[in-house]
Amino acid sequence: MLVPRARSDRSMDMSVRPALPPAGAAPAAPGLPRECDPRAGSLRAGRQPLAGGVGGAVARLGEFLRRHRGAVMAVQVIVVVFYVGMVTVPAFLPLPAMDARMRSSLTLIAQFLFWGLWWPFVILSIMLAGRLWCGVLCPEGALSEFASRYGLGRGIPRWLRWPGWPFVAFLGTTVYGQLVSVYDYPKPALLVLGGSTLAAMAVGFLYGRGKRVWCRHLCPVNGVFGLLARVAPVHFRVDRQLWESSTDARGAVNCAPLVDIRRMTGGAQCHMCGRCSGQRGAVTLALRTPGREVLELSRESVNPWEVRLLIFGVIGSAIGAFQWSASPWFVTVKQQVAEWAVSRELWWLLDTDAPWWVLTHYPQTADTFTWLDGLLILAYIGAAALIIGGWVWSWLQVAAACLPGRRSAYAARLAYTLIPIAGIGVFLGLSVLTVTMLAAEGVHLPGLAWARGLLLAAGAAWSAILGWRLLRAHPAPRAGFWLAFGALLAALAGVLVSWGLLFFVW
Image (tube, rainbow, N blue to C red; front, side, top):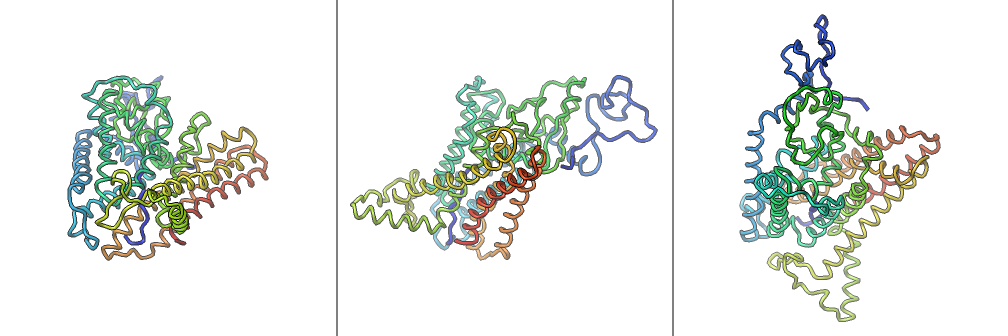
């Protein structure tokens, strides 16, 4: 995940179910489910009937995605062309003047469209619609799959399937993006995003056949998107009973992100492309209560690397990356360390001779990082990850200790209830650049502080409700329940205070 520098100057079950037969309708043939009954009206063998209302409309959307693959691929081509243009062209143009405006600068237009609108609302879309972005719009995924169709088709090596890659990739891109100011300048954007796209195509060419191996194992935002998709109110639901009893003769679906559709129980890895909609009459795009997947997560489905990514990555390191450029603590420490370096004649720490692809180096805009800046940025983000993440994890451990059973296992399950506040926090952090660029154009958003506060409060309330419901489902004494819930609120308070410092104090 790449995050911009903050600059002051710039369970109700809503799943779709088969409609009940109308009064007086003939019963299904003995031994056959209704969806396979030849007397079931216009229903085709092996297909679920689609309910009416909102649920039916959602299910029909899934069918639309399956039936109109050509239209989906055409949209992907358009997005790829837009993506390549927005990333490539500005890198070969002169940097805009300090007083330039979007109406006269293609570079600023690209920056606003890509970083100010694209990325913040991709995060929001994952929380609202699952990984529809990945399956329908993501240019990197589309290019990786395209390369895989004509590549070597090798098996996926064991090292590539290591579950820690999403965590490492997220931290790496987050930190490196801060060091080179990827959101502010087009050359670092081309280096980071272009390099990632080329790597995605190379992995696709080497491994799998028509698959998205990069997306499943190495994409820097795969882990983040997988977490956020767990709270989305839509998903492709698989009815195992219908799957087993189906007589549908259609062949297997090519699931590009390598999901075992038959056993799929959540939306973390599903790219929502719709190719499997209606498969064996058992797969349907359906509504569900937001966060239901978190509440139904089994102990076996808890991924320790996912928990680490959520607590120390999406919450801890992301907050540090958003905070450092606005933090008075950073300025104070930098001044003190600089004085110490001067007193000991460690002049190299104050040099600004690093190339732009190592540290930010744009003298023409008076924006250059010293080696000391780079070291302190690393230290600040690392400290934030350890302090904020450590605070959250410690209180989750306290909450789990108040309940009977294995403490570490239950603490990990409770961690998933923090997905809403983590996702909304990242959305608000990414939107800092949006607000800054609009302000430079003379567009000031009224009630901005209130909007941020309400969104943070909504995210915290959503997480608290999920935690409440998860704890209520656990057999525990009343005192243990309240102590555990209080510890969860303490973990949430640490996240809120950290964001509050950025948005309302500094």
